[in-house]
Image (cartoon, rainbow, N blue to C red; front, side):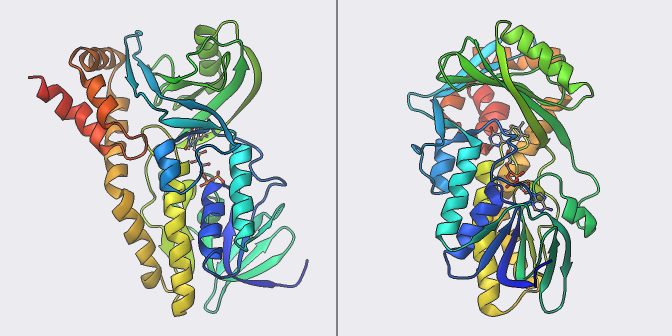
Length: 382
Ligand SMILES: Cc1cc2nc3c(=O)[nH]c(=O)nc-3n(C[C@H](O)[C@H](O)[C@H](O)COP(=O)(O)OP(=O)(O)OC[C@H]3O[C@@H](n4cnc5c(N)ncnc54)[C@H](O)[C@@H]3O)c2cc1C
């Protein structure tokens, strides 16, 4: 084991949230280390890689970089019995990214801002001491003034510190990349139904003229058989190139994301859209706030929970109501039997709510669209 190294900020986890927080704090001149357990940034991959263009702009990332594989203008929504409506725009609304390249881009940017990114450094224990935080990894010991926990959905460290919530809901996310899939290269597809993807939905995300990511979130056992059945039904001639996946958080944020010397961001904090499972944009928006607050606490020499609570105040002001609205919609959709979902899709299509959604829809900030869906669109026609 090497001697203890000292940094202002130590970030646990080199996913998007951790790398973004590292960049946001390093560019303000403090010393930052990212400790990542895997040997390569972005690997293993688990994500479907659909990121809104407005979201990329909100987190100040390019929408035309080499990590972009495809651009889409909207989505088809399919009910359990196949009723469908489309939400579409004239312009591209989202990009499909190569997540390995995307994460590497974020790592390079953090390093260019002055952060160190250490690979194969699994943080095995974290002690929040009076004078500093002590992180023991498989290879090293690091001391830091502030720790940003961006360890992802596993929340192993939070559990060890007894700071993880007792109940949090995940669905199993499973997907494949396949060729020989008939797709509209401009549009993603979302398929709903208890027999298709109980507790979530299945997706087709085009990455090329005849290639796509087909996947689903599943809240029931035997998730692999649901994926196999979906592939067989949606793309019987597909040749699966690879399969990958991971847990998708659907229960919203954890109750508390700040502690003495510690901030929690990204999937670890539950900063994920409960409707779609998308966490890249929201995680990075919160990571920016975390990086800024970490630097403020270093400048003030105040690492108390009271001082760091401004992180939670700020990110909840930005996203709290949005996440509440999305959580409500997730609960409503999960409670509906397939017949009621079919009826809802029919109403959306026949009362012009799909048009309204095309006008007000924002992939990340969904409260306006949810209002249109649950009230405005239908009432406007009465
Ligand atoms: C199947 C699936 C599809 C998805 N599709 C989308 C999508 O289309 N769009 C979207 O926006 N989001 C999507 N998501 C969600 C998105 O992948 C996550 O929200 C996002 O990756 C969260 O970023 P993060 O940095 O918080 O966590 P992660 O990306 O999980 O990164 C955490 C990192 O911490 C490391 N780590 C963990 N513990 C330790 C430790 N003790 N020491 C050191 N390192 C550690 C891990 O190795 C990992 O690299 C999907 C998720 C799944 C599972």
